[in-house]
Amino acid sequence: MVMKCISYILFLLLVPAFALAQLEGVFVETYYAADSIDASFESETPIQEGSVTYRVFLKLAPGSTLLEIFGDESHPFRMESTRRFFNHYNGVSYGYLANRADYEDDTFGLDTYLTLGQVAKQGNNRFFGLPRNQDSTSFIGGDNSNGFLEGLSEVDGIEILNLSINDFNAYGVEDFNTGNDTTIFGSLNIDSVYTSNSMKLQCSGVYGVVSDSNYVMVAQLTTLGDVTFSLNALVRDSTGAEIRYVSTNIMEGENDVFASFLNYPPACGCMDPNYIEFNAAYSCSEVSDCQHLVVAGCMDEFACNYDSSANLNIPSLCCYPGFCQDRDLEEVCPQIKGESFDIDVFPNPAEQYATVQVISGVEGDTEIDITNYNGISLYSERLSSPALNFSKRIDVSSWAPGVYHVRVKAINKVQHSILVKL
Image 1 (cartoon, one colour):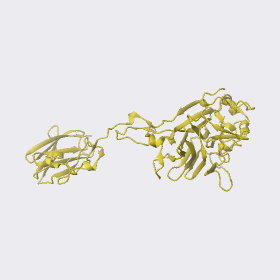
Image 2 (cartoon, helix red, strand yellow; image 1 turned 90 degrees about the vertical axis):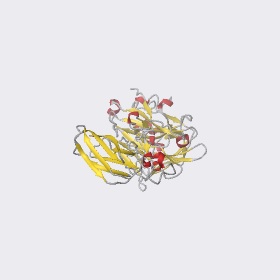
Image 3 (cartoon, one colour; image 1 turned 60 degrees about the vertical axis):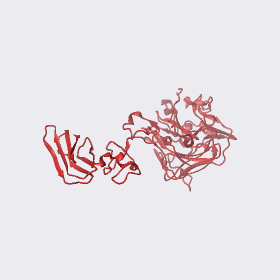
């Protein structure tokens, strides 16, 4: 069996260079799928047919290094599957603890663990994970005397890198006192969810095996289920500056940058800021979700320039008799000069209530009449010298669906409008 490497890159969000220049994206590789031969092997930790091993990489800009992955109160670290994760009986919680010889032990190479690049060691050699399509050799399948993991016999995505890291430090996974791991990364307690508001895996700095692409492996996950995760990372750029990339849009420091692609699978939606449905938290674009163009305007019903079509309120645009933000009130609201008056009907269409707004520059009696298209009156009111800018909220819930005629008479003039009842 030679497995085809099926992989894809999460959307590399196009954002300003100053924001996400050093962390470019997340790469999730479908590393291996266990078949019936793998499942039939008599192992102390047998793997089920159909189990899939995923490897998670952070793609850094050339010259940048990964310092840590973490979870805190504002930015939880989470890895989850709809089925339990696979852990080898002799497996490790952190890939950098594995020995080269461990991979000769049946399905050890599919163990679930976290890491910062390094996945094995042998003497002075340090082995690091890289995408299989960047690899050309293998030691897992080729040297596996048990004959398993045949899909990795030619290329296993593991290479020696001339980088010795001696200061790995971690907390939040293994028990501080006993050293036992009862999370999804240990074999003591098989589970499907790991969430932490207080975890960290750090080192002095790691970069990718191929410097130009700079993929750094941070996790390997084997499961029969569907995987989701949210993670956070501390990255150092080529100038020595450190940036915290977080998966939730909560910034706690000037070096915090929200990177929505640190959530997997990516949430897709409207990414066009010209639409009201726009959300910066989306990682990929779904054009059909962009439904309503942004209409900026004054949404205060008591303003003389109230705009019922607006869906983005700009309070500084609102004008009132005697106050218009240093603009010419008569130009913005010509109706206040007394030459005419304006009416507005909203919401339109209406289901429960409709509001008729009347804006005039001269006080006087006002008449409001609403009839159906057969001329039958549904609403009629006479108001004696109401305010220059007033609104009447009318209960239309009992009216039959249809189109109604709105007639308003004031200062010896008449204005007409249409009301649609749903």
